[in-house]
Length: 430
Image (cartoon, rainbow, N blue to C red; front, side):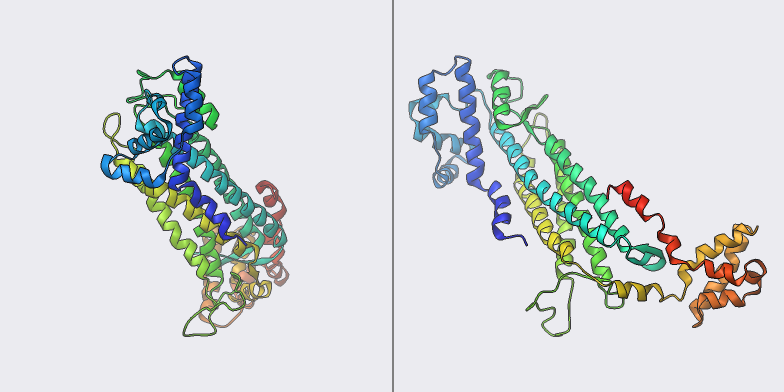
């Protein structure tokens, strides 16, 4: 199980205190770089590094007056430093601080999400192998199709989670970008070395080019990757919800001692956590749309993106973190009912073997159209009557004209449908 402390780590990344810590670090590193360039005296750098600190409440008080968060931050730090504060923020613009600190936060948040994804992947690997040979019915349009195995269902999830992990890792790399190039990105008042030095110390790469801000296609890709992961989690949760329906009941999300399913009906065991995951995925997709809108800004920049990102970046990372922490124990403790799967395989009285009979008739020389018409007529009888499909085939003159009873029987071998599962597992890397 995931504790509150683990979840709080993601929240702390987006706290004002942590943001200001990163911004202060950037300012000090910029001073270090300028000292190496001979712009700032070493003694002044020592004073800055020793004395620089911030007070969140004071920053908020100053912001009420300045109506500018970065100016309030710089002024507050300056109060703690004294005369050497004149070396702070030289040649920089607000976005140099804000965008670079956001990149650091996104990388830190990605590290948590990637670790979560690896946990989910490891559990899916174990579960897929465990149920590799557990036969169940596959459904298309919600209707019984042909046999598969529950392990193959989970292998699909494993493969998709692998892709999502790669997406998050790519998104992390593409957000590992800093920018300290001044008001419109021309380095007019700051040496490019400062940007290179600061980014290297922060584990970032300098942006190839940025006017006043890092271009927002980076952020849109980042949020979109999170939304993709969330959509996959919703897909997994939805499958569990469908398989937990009373008339299906092949799997169930864990139901714990003392848990209440319904305030009115004591018998209820509802897939409430899976439903929560499905609902939250909608927020992630909505946030992705907002991130796309942020790409188009006026000229070198405006700040219409800023207010949006103060919501969608923390909300998306925190939400996905929460969703993963809810789904991981569900998959790990998933209640699986193989006997119910076997019972469900028989509910259509053999109709799930219809394609196999169709192909056998085609082997006897019939066209697909002719064979399909014969088998469909037999299948419709089963839907309308209480007969088994095999019995209808035995009685049908057209079928008996081409297939002996033993050949019909051979079409109802369930192992035929899952005989390639090992090869599929190998392709997936299981």
